[in-house]
Image (spheres, rainbow, N blue to C red):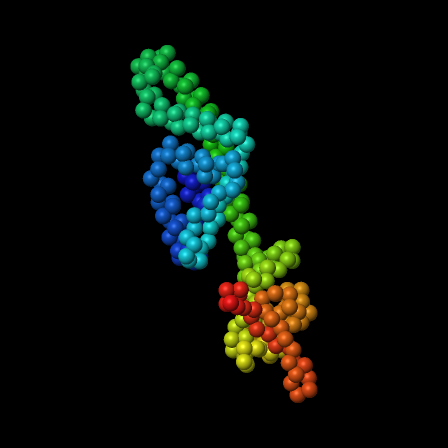
Length: 253
């Protein structure tokens, strides 16, 4: 139970050292908790009736948050709560009251104590199997999540703004950031050459190419992103495509 409470969620600064400190603090805090407190933490945090919860991560820094939950129906949640509360009561009875409840100085009393311990063991073992199943499921989820975080699909989603279904969130793409950076370096009178920007980006960010985003040219990227204006200028008798970032409504007034 302590492993589930300690590891079912983590939230903190998006760096390995920061998250490791948070994880270690959770483990240390959980190690000091009694069974009753652990059950209270488990209910409504890991075992819930609603999968949606608030995100408590800090908003003024880059942060990372992962939360795993078991979502039960109201009926199953109530039954599970009763079983866990009963487990706490059983533990407390064994630790604090067992000797007082049984006459261990007589044969009949010892038989009664033995039967009570066998019954208690059976109930504890049943609860233990439930907890072990939950812990194994949680560990499997953690492994699958770790595999996904290291996958190209995750990188495309988080860094490149490309969803698993191929839909592009242009405002979150690295290629748009690269176009902004290129414009800052190459712009003349506020406008940067699309062709020059493409070459500039290819040299510095070779993985950021139009084809990655389903586009056949840099002009298509500029157009599809809806982030930039594009305009054609005459240069030496030839049309040259140039772009600049669109002004926000607040800046245009």
